[in-house]
Length: 115
Length: 111
Image (cartoon, rainbow over all chains, first blue to last red; front, side):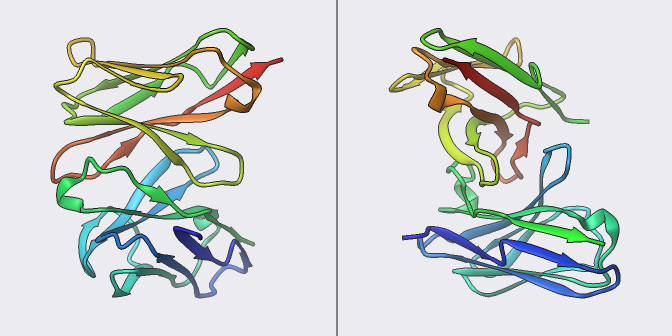
């Protein structure tokens, strides 16, 4: 049973395109996150949602738009892709943002390559 | 600005020895600290959490210490095995705030 799943695992696309990454968790968690891990391996939070409500919105370009249709899903849509968007994107979930010390469960990652 | 430093990019340890990884932070007063393991091509996996009022936590061969005066956490793996080879990330967080990850230390356990 996969706890946090992401699709696709690999995404290769050209500059200027629009793409989406999907994430689903079957843990019953209330909070979901998107992280970006760049080539230097820094893992940086982009967004978090708690019960479908946006809680954290870090300084990311507004070309990135998260969408949470329900608390088990958090999708990431990226418009007008740029070379600098190439990275591995991880979805994660945790039990409750208000008790933020709970551990986070990460998906397998989506490696995005923009050419 | 808040900063997390993990001791080195890579650490080589002989099998059977204790591996010790360091996480230092500045300009931050975390409520808790977490350690994660990340294998190549995979997402991080949670290992241990220690809160600001705790000095030490253990889980099987893993031990974490947290010194809020030194602003440092040490992560120990005793009786290390080649299967322990991975990148280990420390992460700090505070109530009602986001968690911040360090860059990680690549640990190689040599057979």
